[in-house]
Structure formats: structure tokens, C-alpha cells
Amino acid sequence: MLKISTCAENDETYAEREDPEIVLDFFAGSGTTGQAVMELNRDDGGNRRFILVQLPEPTGREDYPTIAEICKERVSRVIQKLNDSETDELPIQGTQDRGFRVFKLAESNFHTWNADVPTGDVESLQHQLDLHVYHIRENRSAEDILYELLLKSGFPLTTPVEKVIFAEKTVYSAAGGVFLICLERELTLELIRAMADQMPERVVCLDVGLEGNDQLKANAVQIFKAKGVKSFKTV
Image (cartoon, rainbow, N blue to C red; front, top):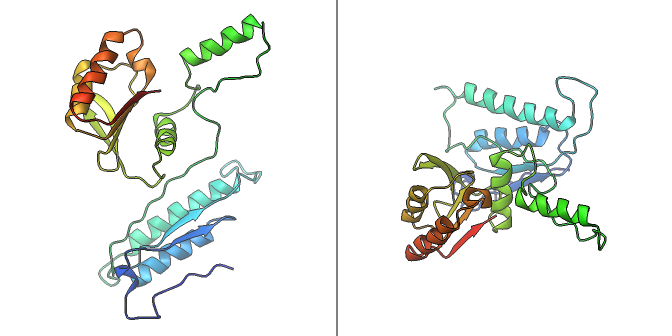
């Protein structure tokens, strides 16, 4: 049974809490828990967050092929309904943060080395080497790669991420500029300098962005080092 606690035990209002609760529903179904949390936030000005987990169980429908898709649609409609209902007759008691991200569990965006290749199997070994020259799996979006790199770098999925443009290239700035991730396939010296000027702690770029340009990679290492960047890696 889901229990959502309030601050009735003392005089502190929920909106004043510095550590808002996170409500977890591991069997989300159609998203009832998410709706309940958002409506409670509306009523008392709280800023509780929720995590809904749902397996993609098939529904047999074409519009919503899985229960997970129904859950996503319900949360979207509830947000729209709450936003539309905020009129002068229903004042907001606190800053409402309505929005959500959807993540799906999947294999890594990067091909992994298969250590089970038989000794002497030259063809299989060549295939493994080819996969690591172009090691990003097909049909993976920039956001897919971005969030895997965030997790592997120790940042939670809730880390604020901003898309910025440097030297006409897209760069993702995470945690207020602490971590810069560039997924461009063609890096330039101007881009390297622009990122370094932000003085982040970490920078990650794609290997393919420096393919065949050892001089640019060597310059990048020195430029980032001179700006105090603690870690520069390519993947």
C-alpha cells in the first residue's frame, strides 16, 4: 500500500522542506501513483518527486502497445490537466516542477569486447576490432549516449543538463558546467578552446571526432590541462 506522508506532525509546511520525498512505485501500471503525487503537490505546494517503474507488458493495442506507454500517456495528460487548471481561482502554494523523463533499460550504446572469441579465429577477431573502430551501436541517439556517459561518470539521471552551442557545435553541459560532453563527429580546435574556456572539471568527447587527427588530440590535451580541466577523455 502506498503511503504519502505530510508534515502534519509539526508546523513546517511541506514546501519549506529542503529534502522533499521521492515516491517509488515499482509496479506503476497506468501511473496512478504519479497522478496522486502531482495532485498532492498541487494541494499543499509540495515538491515531491516520483519514480515509476513498469515492464513493457503488451496490451494488444496499436495506439498504446504496452502498459508502459499507457503510463507515459497518463502522466502527460495529468500534467496538462493540472497546468490548465491553474487559474486565479486556484492559486499555487509553491513552485511546481512538472515534467518527467522516460528511460528504458537497454544494452550499452557501445559495443563491448567479446572475450569468448576462439583462439585462431581470425575472422571473428577482425570483426571485434572493426566494432571497436566504430564502437557506437546503430540507431542510438545523442541522448542515449549522453545519459550512459553521465551514469558511468557517477552522475545521477536527475543531473541538470543544458544543451549549449560552442563554435557552431552542440555541447551538453551537466551539473552547472562541471561536466561537458561533446558528441560531435567532427571536432575543431575552435570548439576545443571554447569548451576549455568554460573551465569545467571534466570533458568527454567521442573518439570518432578526433579520428585521424592526432595533432588535434594532442593540442586538446594541452589546452584542457592549461585551463585546469582535471579529466579529458574520449570514448
